[in-house]
Length: 217
Image (cartoon, rainbow, N blue to C red; front, top):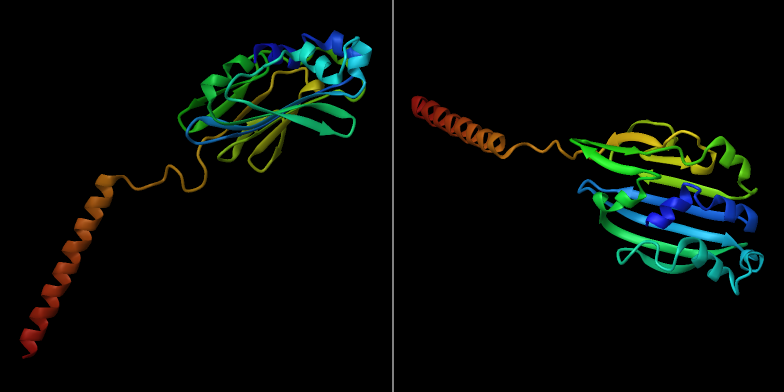
């Protein structure tokens, strides 16, 4: 993950700029149990391998990002989309603490009922932006369990999307860590008290009805 985080932070941007375009897109959904699921796409444009002097475009991808940039929790699959070739890494129910290696791009923390997403630094500098070849892209999209409170990305419902290669400020967002109806359940003691009170009221009503019938008789 650390090598890939460096790539997103453009530690490899000079190599990529000389060789062709890179695509790094993260689509992630946060869950109330402090886990994350989603996909990560890393890809290069067709022909990059030849420009870099390696046998295939997949070899170029490996040279840039490593053989296994994520680890056992991420399942790789070949990726192809028009002129792009690479890998899609799928992950499910990964604890947010295990995403710490991506801290150079962003880190996810939770405080009470609020998720926070913050970058340790800007994804790119102004000078790095100028070095990027046309067509290079890096998108980060995070969907939260509850509504977004604030962010410096584009908000659509509970999802915030950042164009990392266009940003010179660290990513930032806060959102509710629980969805509608969550966290509002009645405490057990209150539920028991309510049921007890209801039973007493019903019992009293029955007594009143019985007494009234006896008086009538």
